[in-house]
Image (cartoon, rainbow, N blue to C red; front, side, top):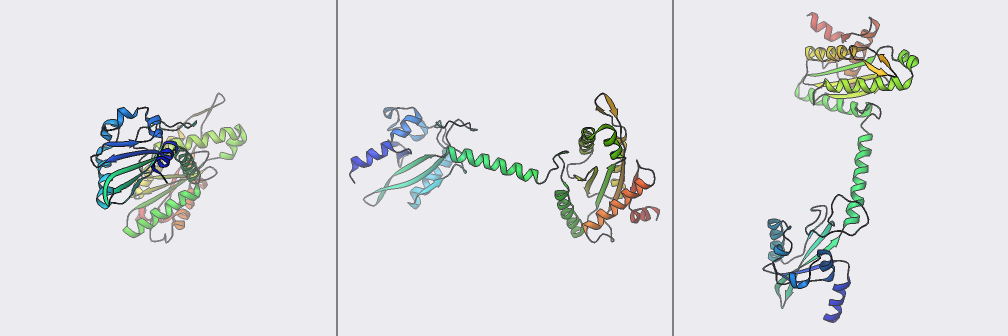
Length: 317
């Protein structure tokens, strides 16, 4: 194939071609780059690549080319590593996060008579791939979040919350750390739904979740266990600390007022507390202990906090 044919191809392909000498001076470029950079060849040829493209990350770029020169082997940089090296506007009719095209860049050593004399950089527009991959990643992130979060209250759903508890239970057992569990549900919630409708009930659940989240630490893990029942994992927390948190939740919810269709809606909650003990061989045992304490709170009058019976024995002793 003749040199003229190669030059003709280089001028017509939809890829940028930039040729540098070993001093990183531009000696050749093709029409694709001329159009996208919006510069004439007489402004570019014979100039340092850093003069023509001052946006280049100089240290990184020099290291990249040095490896090509020293090893005499090609190198590559994808848009996933760096969105772009050269600030070349993309021409795609899509909205992206960047005004500049995403780029895959290939660095090729060029030899003459067995001696490396130049480096050729191929610049491929990867904007479409970048855009749709970003959309896919966003969709996957949303899907992953949906698998963890309760759609109504925006706290952990039961499945993910139990996974968190299993991890915290194993960690506490392994390192002999404190661990507490709070379970609570709303008193007479069915009556509230029957009296005001499910929209009111949903609003109460949402506000219960929001209020409770505001009372917890960053390390605490809060989830909707089911229906009107919620649960809180309290790492590094003993019985006294858990009872304090439980009472704070109960009291705050009792004094909360929710507006619904011009009416003041008040509600209360019953709370059960359990902590890690020798009786808890599995995390399910801890749930069972807290749930029994919650039942005690409901059966003895509601709107109160009860500790699991083994914890009550410890308190008495």
